Length: 324
Image (cartoon, rainbow, N blue to C red; front, top):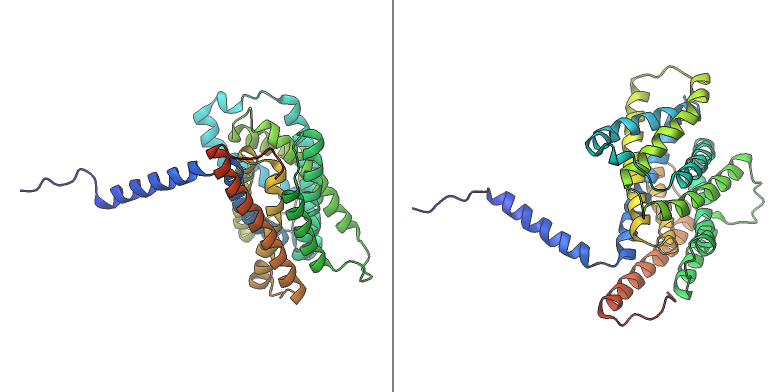
């Protein structure tokens, strides 16, 4: 008589699949893994922008930020408690302070721009972050930027210009300027994250930001407080969950990948934003959006291909000096 298996067949298959995935994941280069995390982060950020825009019809931006940070802290609580006190220990308190102040500015200016500008426009202007972060990476992280990364970033920016069509006579509004300022602040946050992720746990990084950004926004959020209904509450909870996932993914991306290597993949967010605009807001992008989006995707896929090839060369010891 056959002896029954100790584990259900489905459980065994699941474990085998998990093992194969883990082995494949470990075989990727650090930059390739960073790019994968960045792709997930950009998708979640596009969803986050959509929810913020919906909430902005009724609530002030500081109230949205205050409640978002509070709910993110609640989501993080089980992990914080499980790892306490280690989950709150940091090796870089001054870097965290700078990051919190910059993140507060980036969120305030960025959320305001998202609420008042069309989703595609605020997303496109936000891509200035790629240029800021590439420049800052050279000065602050001493990263070597080779011809391939420069080409991918420039190509992606050309795609953005195809969509924006500068020189059409449109004047820059205060909200457009806020979007650019938010991009610069967000780029500096990314540079700091690249350093902090080398010494602190992801949950520590997220907890510090969720707590102190929330405290900074609290006085303003209370002053502009508007009573929330059930629909607002559901959207706020969704916003907290999506924001938590986006930040954790972004932290992982910057932990594995060099800042300038993953920067071009921020452009993919425009593709997500275009799809969401159609589905949620019923706004169809112009043909230039499709053309620019195709250029952006091509630039990002080229970078992914380059990093994958480079990872294999590193593994075999045939990689050239850092000129990628």
